[in-house]
Image (spheres, rainbow over the protein chains, first blue to last red):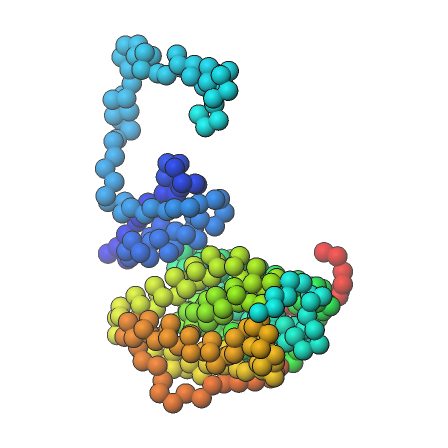
Length: 99
Length: 283
């Protein structure tokens, strides 16, 4: 018999506008308690303005054996944005305050 | 309202009153911080162990901030205040000194300690939890009032500590409500602990001889007012947890006047032991 509480994955956000980052997991009976515990497990050192907890069971994931799903069989570098020199050009015009 | 922006602005009436208030705040923080830290490594679940240890660090940090303010008012430096005073000089309430982990003061190295589990079962974590809940709510009420203190350094500090104290009340409320209604055993244990601790919780608000000086100068509201606010905060939470407040409890006073039980002396003996090997040494 499993006597452990369910697991919640913890994500935190360093500052508003940044993506939430996965930082670990906690055992807890429910989401509210998971937040309360995760605040100390994962929010006590680095800066954090917002925290999510998600039941592990809610996460649907790919398998590592299927990592090849993400590989490019042919050259698709046209999808990358390195050709855009927006930042450099904007800086030259003095317009790059918030790029 | 005259705002006193610095220690030099306090007069013969307000200065001793502020010093007494700061000692009460600092000593409460130091002692409850120490008590909560006794669970480090032996808490009932890992995450609670960490939460308790973290809250202990918060309160010790608050205590240090208050001891530093005392030093600016002419009291000795924080190290000497902490490690060289005997129990009769402490002005903490009886609630924070209560012992829920018997034999903890005399315990040696707890790491890899084969009696760790025994200590956990002998100790009463429920006592520490209910104490933490009752104290944190009082702390929140008092700090909120002090944010408007006429003594500016204290108002400034109270505003800084708001976030940490917010977590302490979140933690206490959540666990009281969940454990209160979880099983018959958890409800009974919480109720008997609440009944035992309630007179000591009322003792947080023991009036001192500086009541009128603090209230008139608008440095801190009267204790009875803070107690009423605290009661209105905790009453609905206690009800929601399925618990009852004891009907005719008499407040347990004495702590604010330096009158403590033997548990505080035992705590201080353990806390001051290393320092007293060589007082004033640089470690």
